[in-house]
Image (cartoon, rainbow, N blue to C red):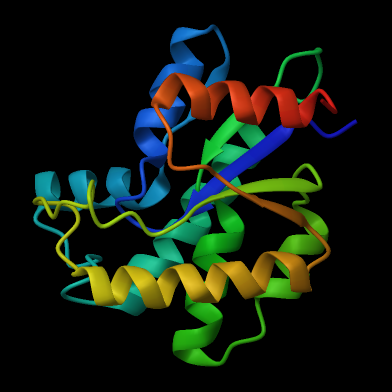
Length: 178
């Protein structure tokens, strides 16, 4: 059984906070590729940043996400939660460049059939040094993901707009089939 769970959805929708809660509960969490790339590029003075070279940024995000997938533990009984991942990066790259990368990557690196999407939540959305895009861009991204995951055969649950502990409970109960 595939134990790799994607938490995706709208930027600023509370994904990272939810994943911190799941980590605190003892689950393995893989950090978002995009934020790591922004931090890496800032340190080295690189250009693979979404506001400088989106194509280079997305190619790097695909590369990082593939490495995350390959290096994560595949055996065991515990869930591994991914803050975004390969599908998000590949879908954005395909939309931007027209390159048909999504299907091939999805078939080679398949996640658990159930994906959780954080819906737009303007009350908690904030921009920062790593998230410079506005709520409008975040909504466009969310709509793309809301269509992409089901088109690839994933079952999607929208995360409820409740406390972080309640969100974590929702994810775990859904995965347990309750």
